[in-house]
Length: 570
Image (cartoon, rainbow, N blue to C red; front, side, top):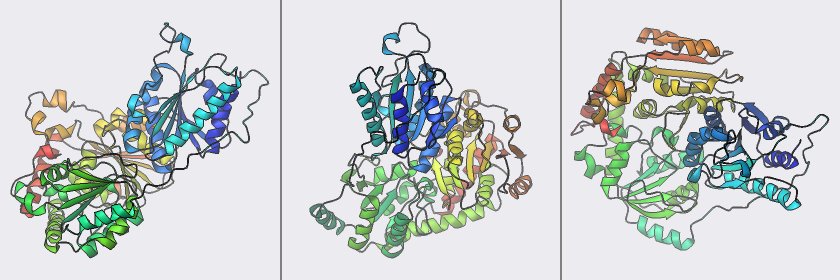
């Protein structure tokens, strides 16, 4: 039997610009699966593992800035979406989650594949809807269309995010012989008009008066997609007006005029007073650097956060003003209304940055082989056009330590988990023909191996696998590093390599254990190919810890740091 409101649902999705759906096989979801798979304007892909499917959809939606549909069957299938949904919620990525369900009368009656699916994602979706469970009345059909419109509109409204529709379905699920799918040519559609919040003239006058007292301004952008207009404004503020702009790698706003090596000297109590700003202005989402967050919490500096929806984000514990406007508009206004800044303050930050750059070059010219110097070499070979996906734990921290990147940097810092890194990168490959590079550790890589369990080509995917056969970050944190259970219960040592996985999925594979092999492997790593490539860099976890500590000590001395940054600052 064909359920017309399901066809209407898909038609509304297409009408509102949704062009991609990730479907996971199941029987209860068959009406949804067939409706999406047969619609001419929606590209549907099937991914069997729901956890991977959800992260793949996340990776696509990150790039497309449009909702991607997720469809799964009833029962525990929906629960496997949860990690990616939480990540999407905190990253503000739009997803439309459609979970097929048993009819309400069969929940908790020992019928197969039933759980409590209504509002199952709790506070990690913008809203959860329940689709009608029958359509005998015209009002129910009207209600179904209203739900779909509202859900899609809500997923796109700032801040964007995941929205859930739970859809109870009764048998029969499949069309009878001779039944035809007829999508409405003009489905009922309504949109929401939402204007950008703006500061009033009175507010701007008060802000200007306060800025007249500021001589040590610091701007801290959080995670966001690249924005050339914002980057140009920040460069002008730093270059021409002596504003200190501190940029993590995930801000995608680094330049030669911004501070990007701050992790190498922040944390020194002797520098706290002279580096402390008068005022911090932030925008975007999270920052990686724990040392930066701790420094600003101790500084006592007032903090203004640019947040178009006006919600509070008090990361540095000194929030005094929320600026409900667009970042680009406020930064443009700021450049025209900022009082002269302290050149010595700017010069101190800029001097530390330049000394850190020189020290890094010196340090990596003489280090023995390990994942840190290996990654330093790898980063120099990645094409500028490549999307650069970073797994959590050490991969993203290493890249942040190494300073400015030209590529768009993508990392799941909404929840900062290791799950889904592979899948998110795979989703990205479905949206672009440019190279997509994933830099990952062994724990994150093997945890998400089902990312590759599908039937779609990914010739532009390149994977740099840092395999130290353990969770190496725990050697760098004082607590677990000092425990006798370190290797078994914290590092969780393993002896896997990616060779068998590469064979199973038809990937090109190479493994290197020294600098010479690495240089040879990188020489053609980005040459076009029909299949993805994995470059596995095999190292020792204890040796990697020694190398990182050695580099940190050199950086400490080069920046005149009064004390060595502690491993806890990771």
